[in-house]
Image 1 (cartoon, helix red, strand yellow):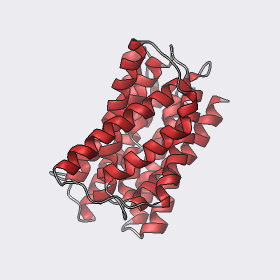
Image 2 (tube, one colour; image 1 turned 90 degrees about the vertical axis):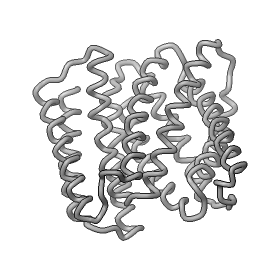
Image 3 (spheres, helix red, strand yellow; image 1 turned 45 degrees about the vertical axis):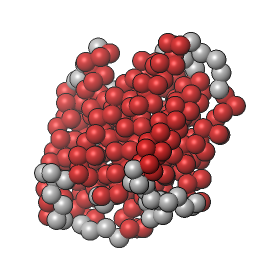
Length: 280
């Protein structure tokens, strides 16, 4: 059952990433994330419940990780083609698997090592393809933001596995949303005082983003909490959202070198499939 919850979560995530790219036409990164997260917080507010100070400190730390990943990921979406961003982000499960080995005592077998090799090959090919597209990786702010998003996203996934052993999924989701909203609110206020923030424009895409991330996160937390759930497998399934993101992004934004990127994505997904096959 937890595998199916993770799969539906992946589908919602794929559409969510595209919706964020569309929303960037009307608002800046921080307004989009603040509004969408505030709406999501409203949706899950009935599940807010009391918890210990220790629990809340853990969730505040998670909120910092998630906020860092979301903001840097949105900056990458703003500066880079969505097909490039989505393909690079497919590598995230590889890092989750590697760190799961270090932190949770898992071991890579031959099949998993083959998956790691394919993912690394795909990342190199994508960097070459980006250079041919006229996007230099060296000194590129978009790729730097993408790297930060991937690293903090991996850290957040590992932290989720740790804290969910002693907390309920809806408690984690509801309070994490509250803290993320507060963090983003502070960032927006600071930017407005410095005249760095553009005026907010209401866009119905923001409501769609909030609905999608609320559903995706809820299914993710419940799948991770389920008996026998494996973080490495759930992370791999969630990253399959890139297929939807890539396809919709290619159609909606008419980006360049789609055929070459699709080939690289196929290699990346093959590596992810090997990682999954070796994990079950």
